[in-house]
Length: 304
Image (cartoon, rainbow, N blue to C red):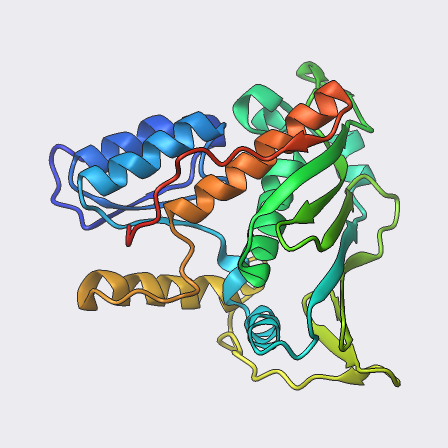
């Protein structure tokens, strides 16, 4: 395809283990690139991908579409304007009703760590990107624990043994000293959904299920108005769940390529590399049972 067609943009949506090879080939063929999250399988390869995008002068984006939802954009504006004051602590948790699915079906590559499977990569990458973007500063150190609650499934095709995580916990710190606690548990019989809590020197913010945003500045929690971005009326699941952020991100990519504009919300390869460095540190921490300093390496800030 790359040899026979003149393409503007290649979209890489394979398993993470294949991102590096496919992305490098697309860049070297002259394409701009949108790569699915996480950007790669480890920070050594994501740094190489970033450097290559700069070398060939191609724009390179990562599918961190959560940034683009109106409620997350509102949080970003609140933090930029210091409405909550200096952030002291962030607690970001999620629990889900995934037991039946995990216990009664195959997971394929998503069950294998070596191929980029596991919920740290699947949803933790989104969470880490949101945190880095909201705070506009690096996470300096982490202590992480990855768990596989349902390590196998025996179906008609045989036994699937899993080593990828279906639950994870981490605590860490930002460069400013703000503390961080993240906990995700997928294999619940009945989960309770998402909850984000941000504690600042002026106020406290709560976001539930990416739908409800409330703040307290010492008194009761009051709802924060969010300007909606409604999907088309005839759109059905599962597309309707992704439309809100994804449409706006794709629209911004189009403007970036046609008008040579760059949105401050656009997740680029430098952002993807930073997230990968944090993910690598979490995995190393879980393996060694120790606190790990996040090594971002000589990443390159650029317009790509």
